[in-house]
Length: 43
Image (cartoon, rainbow, N blue to C red; front, side):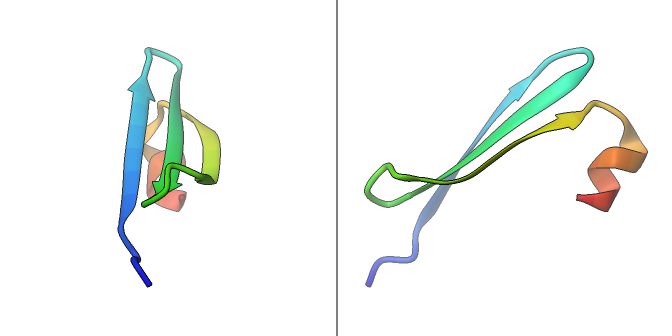
């Protein structure tokens, strides 16, 4: 079993879009965070 994950970040002034893909390219997790230190530290 391959446990490699790939993380993509799309950073903007107000938000950060995050995507996590497994080794086959299947989306494992995705979310949108506020671009604020407190929000990022909580995640």
